[in-house]
Length: 274
Image (tube, rainbow, N blue to C red; front, side):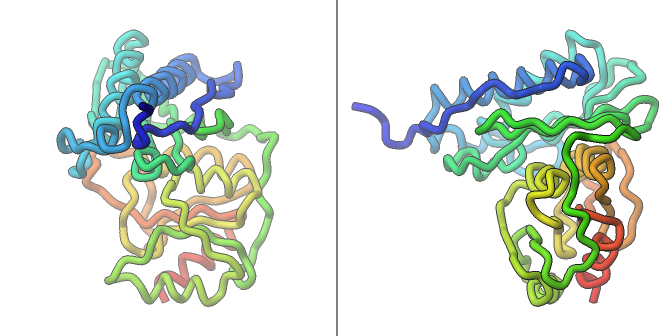
């Protein structure tokens, strides 16, 4: 008898463009293959089981571990460096580092909600040069190279009033900022997947995404957006005005804002701060 706790949502091959950095492309396909294999063999409870504590200080699920292990094998073959949510840092002495969120939206993924993503960015000598976000349940990928235009564009919206905004869930100590945004926006969504929501801003499917002041984001959550959104006409910043920078200390946190335009990003940040 089939196990009703298994997830039947298919996991197709990612549509990785041929122009993607070879190490980033290989890491993404390895991540998707490991994600698919895990979903085929393990049920929801097994996928969601906590098996340790990641480098960011949060619990690591079995799904996270399996996908990140596959990525680390690519890193060792390619001899590039890695900064990732669970493992932390692997230093192979390379000038190239991949900053990766192996499974963004883990809670969605282990529950069978088809809203999760692989996201990675290439850092060359400390500078973000390229990024790739892959929607795990559909194969759709967003790729951008810093300073080059993309085939997708943001909505171009400049005003918060009447905008469609995705938000992280409201946190008790930061509820006022969340409600201020909700009062001005025309539509609020909570999808629980930062990297995918940032890609949807770049795609023009929604106007903005934000953490309303709770300092939930690590740099691995935002690195891909920091390339993809600006390349599509958007902007990424911290709601509290702090500089977003690549740092191996995964204890550092930000309240990321990803918006269709710099003007909308600033309005969102101002509204969050009150």
